[in-house]
Image (cartoon, rainbow over all chains, first blue to last red; front, side, top):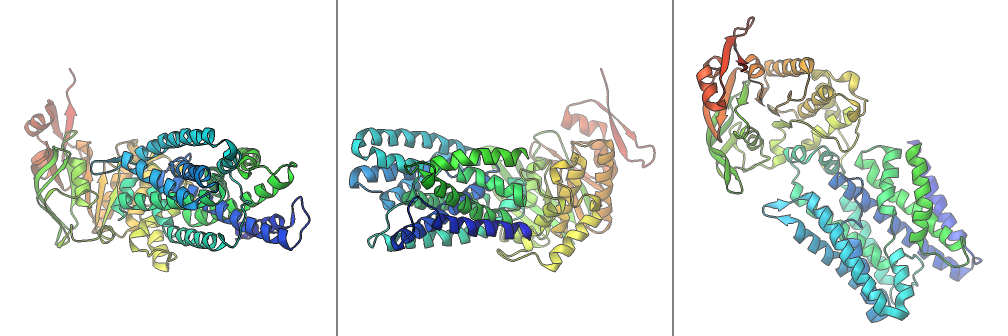
Length: 301
Length: 258
């Protein structure tokens, strides 16, 4: 399929650009930094877009993204508290923030005898607001750490990798990719759920169990991403739509394409964030700045 | 052979009983209509029959096997359910929609097999939707879409087909076309159960009717036995006239106006 070849080429190009292009000349040390940045970019962009595609499919709602369900805000809150207390992003706190809020959202949405998907979205949005307020409080208390928290909220791929955190980061990435591979197997279920929950139930899909698996898996994935590179927005919302425009609605193609396109997009946005101004911009700023015009162009075409 | 048997089946949402103490059995290749006023429990009964809802008490058997002991995937290989109206959140091509009917037979990660494509082609031919197969499903009219959903159900290779008011949103032509299609499927040996609000269509096409009222089965019988002024007045609380269909001789219902 030519479209597949095309996005693969664009993806590989974005990897090369991500490694070669930057404000400083390339030497061994910079190369190492850039390679890590590219790895994190692929991981974060891919996972966020994948989760977006998954959740939009599950909820049959094109506005849902990882941040709608509260888990990203929970992770950001956990990470912000980590910065305040320990002076550095703490993956453990971010992770528990994400799962904690996810669990809370689930508890609110649960009703006698089942779980309503619309309630899940509403509960997620409400909890996001709560977490944002709490992050603001942390920022006000932070003072000196304000700048760092700001980058956390907007996302930043240039974290320092050293001997103390390298193994942990590799382990987290492997766990996340394993989970992505596991979730990919549900592409048929998502296709059927988009035709109505009764149809799905009649064909043997347990909607309750399936929703739970997808909801908590994506909370976990988003927790992993935010704990490493902060709350990068826009990718999870828009990339699944781009993928759908290019490959049609089937989740077999869409889930995979979302991952590749998300990774590509984040790599290019990160490269831009390094060269667009003298200061390095948070990558989350660039994703929206560049992504919105591109999306409008694609959507109106 | 007995296709379906329910014994003392009850179901309730919260505390309100929706289906109460229903005992019913269907023979293979029957064409059965479930009729009754709004809230009589018809749609719930249909969902109990295909395992979407589980009875609170009582037993349900499908082709001699207890329903509650079977995984829903296995049930879906024998029973297909067509909802009243299907909303497609994603704009699949028609043949992709029909392919999803193969889900009960597919393993995760595995590609579609030759027999899946054969089943889809067969369903497309039988439901006569060949000229629509590449079309985006949301570009179809409601009548065409209902045909596609029936084709999807046929791709499940069911022995029992359950339909919830399949013609309620359709114009005269599509009502006729869908009912003729079901009649043809039934002639090929498929057991068809249809929930119907239109008593005249039900009377015209169904061999047997099941009249439900307040969660219970009020009566079962042929259209001639059930479509009677006295029975309808009692159940629907409405005065009607019943006359014979000029060609088929089956009873048809007329409302009296003021």
